[in-house]
Length: 290
Image (cartoon, rainbow, N blue to C red; front, side, top):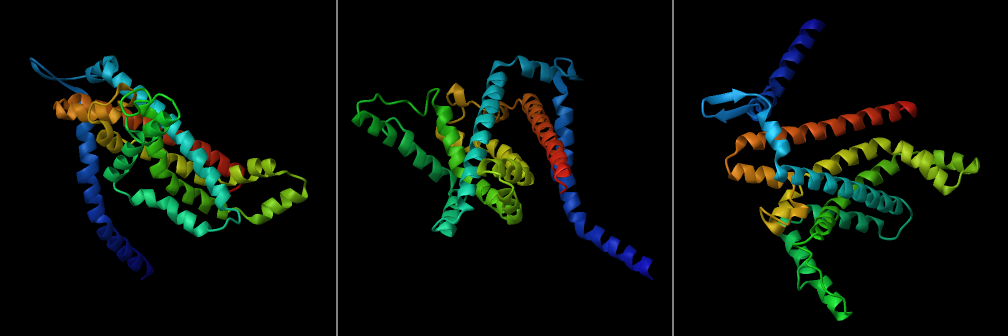
């Protein structure tokens, strides 16, 4: 009787998840297989041939190398910066500060603001006749072309941090709430100072949250294309020409072979980074007994 009930429950569970499995297969698995096949295909005068020619051409393409370098630079700078800022603010919010609830709510607001409104706001600040250049001219400093120069990367990083820091703060703050206060009390009795408590308690027991925030921050860094596209168009200054620009432009040219090859390479790099973080996080969690 018990076996029949379990078998019936398994069948019901399978039929419940079947629509999701079909959707995953149709909209994710099959397109990925098609992309993988297409990335190893090339059109020639004699027809279609298979090989790694697309990847060789991609590596020798100066636009792709520029986009890959800019994307790597932006991801490293923005992720390190946003994690440091969000952790610092979360630590401050974890203390007995006035209006703590209102501050937490305020940090979430940028997540619900439309992208076009965000860009309009930052254009008012960084435009040639914007707020920063107006203040600079008042004090006798020459203005900077923030939106079409090497300084544009700074603007993009600022937009990314401003939009996403609130979500990271809430995640870090929730992680801090899960660290037992007894650990700090015991460390204080043993003579540990604030820096030692932060290094050997906070950072260690916050590692699962840090890992999650790190992965989310990387994913969000690849979504900054929307902001850059609205800010500077399909062909922005070369300092902020990202992989997403390269792929978008290949799509406009109907060069699907380069497009899917670049997408596959980007997916491999992100997967490797996340996999390495999984290994590090698992070792740390095992070391602290979680």
